[in-house]
Length: 308
Image (cartoon, rainbow, N blue to C red; front, side, top):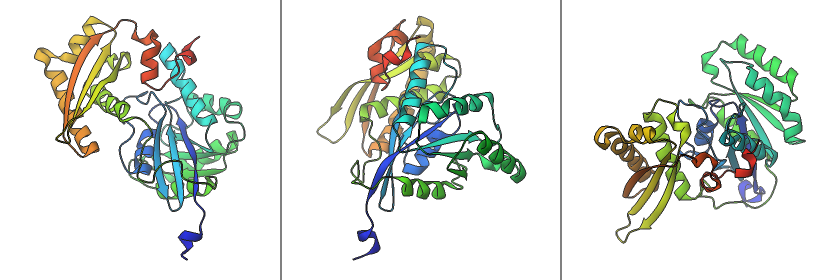
């Protein structure tokens, strides 16, 4: 009998929390080895709690990539922040990610102030990300200050983008998972329905293409998914925007912007699914979509969490 056969299986949840743009989605994608969370240069891109599944030896780590923690202003913001803290409270281990070059910001201080009440006895590790942007002495000072502010069980210095330190973090997380059977099949990388992953991919392309505030006032829903006899899939999606003027921005002159977004999304979906995809986008104006409970359900958020 091999050592691996004697070693018990482990499985549990690791929640990634932090400010918007701290690198949580990038780390999730690196740990899982596939793109399951959208990553853009814009903040607040992760709306729902995306779960990515990583295998490390005999351990299965289910990463909960939460929306960034920030000061909420609108119903959608409040629902996102509630989802983030909910993901942390339900986890076996929490990883707080901060950016090395930004240090202890007001946002990080606010998270530290809330964390004791929010996570209870759940062990919390600190991951200082983007370490390639600062000098060693700055890192040491930041580590000292953060550990004085909160009792972290471990501190990791990483670059989620380049991979530095990520294996050590994954191995440590694997060791903290409770013994038990796997929660998902070994070849499954995410627990979101494919319809939602497809919508997230299209929303990423919209966010990258449109540089106004518009992306935070739009959402994408996969209205129809049809499996075809030739093995391809037909996917119909609706882009909901809040104003008539936004519809024109998404469509572009002669529909060129929407075509380019659809092409980029289709190509990534084909790569992700490993087969041909026929993607059809529609843009519709729904002035009050931010106040419609169905839109929140589609994003995996709780409408009630957004109340004042």
